[in-house]
Amino acid sequence: MGSRLTRLKPRSGFCAETGAAIAIFLPTFLGLPVSTTHAIAGSIAGVGSVNRMKAVRWSVAGEIVWAWILTIPCSAFVAAICYLLVRIWAPNA
Image (cartoon, rainbow, N blue to C red):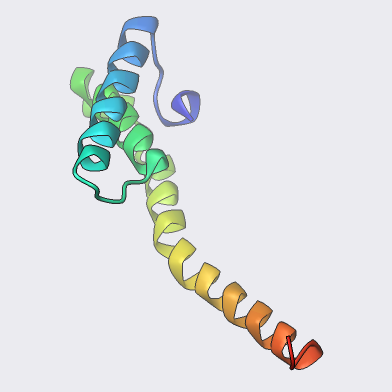
């Protein structure tokens, strides 16, 4: 993910991973749900934008955000179809 979003060096990769770990551990400790993918993508974009904003490929970041937005309704649709198929093929199950 890092190579598509921005160019990472070992130091910036370490910072991105550390930031993502903190962003995951704190909500987990508080009992809140958290997405590891959101955390790492955000930390990579954050590390890339520290040097300069043009270092981040914002078109790729936009694609990632759209994928996150579409995930919920698409998974709900697939789950509904699966439920209907199971209900039709195995009504007594």
